[in-house]
Amino acid sequence: MQNFRDYYRILDVETNASGVDVKQSFRRLARRYHPDMNPGDKVAEDRFKEINEAYEVLSDPYRRSQYDNFSRYWDANGQKRKSPRKAPPKRDRQVAEEFDPKSYKDFDRFVEDLINRSPDISERPPASARVDPRAKDAFRPGVKKTEYTVRETDNNATKKERPRNIEAKLTLPLEKAYSGGKERIRLEDGRSLEVEMPPAIVNGQKIRLRGQGMNGGDLYLKMTVEPHAVFEVQGADIFCQVPLTPSEAVLGGLVEVPTLDGLVKMNVPAGVRSGKRLRLANKGYPRGNSSRGDQLVEIQVIVPTDLSTQEKELYEKLRQTEVCKPRQAMIESLLS
Image (cartoon, rainbow, N blue to C red):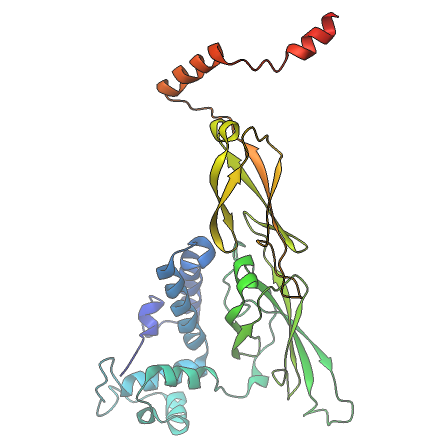
């Protein structure tokens, strides 16, 4: 079987694990491998995606029974088993009639159909939450990433089949909001959608997904951009503070500055002071007219407190030879 993934191994649970065990293991692993906790680590990012995919299947009894039935029929090397190792319970026998394992030669295709196919979702209890990845219960299963309210849209339709709009809240890190791209979201009704996000998303922006609401209504994603540890969005401009050593501030020169596009070299003028703002043109946030704002870089001169012996000697020599007398004018004014 191509691309087969053992979801029980991925979530580090036994095949007979209870729903509670699956949930607890998911929360532990999701926190460990979340991209916010492992910035720039591609391996952790891929592991995080695997964990979420595994939980999407194993947390849902219907999907889990289909996956178990499929796994009994095919092994990870693509060899068909003649028969399951043991007779499936009643639930699995029902699934076997609905889902034919031997019709799939590729595991990815099976997972895609599995996630998009589920029993009557109206029987599932409602839930709502919005995730802050730094919160204590950030990865509490069943409340991942979305929270929605319902608005009626067709007063002439019958009550049972009336289209209704869903409004879901989705939080993105700044880098993802800036670049856009594919994002998988999970709704409270159990559906998992892969959405192509536009670039340059801002707080409060709404994205409309036609026909993805209830009974043919629309889904509105209300976007929130997480605060960033380095950057602050100020309209179309990006603000950040960059620390310099005293020698860099005195002598000036090229220094590396982070931007949303990566590190760039910025020319710092000699004698720059703390609080001075420099501008990187066209390195801000995109505007609606295809232009970009600027990045505002505020200089912070950092005075070292833990000096080596050599550094102390050099500073002593500098004190004896420097001609700058910053307090002289103040003292003379007091004495005159």
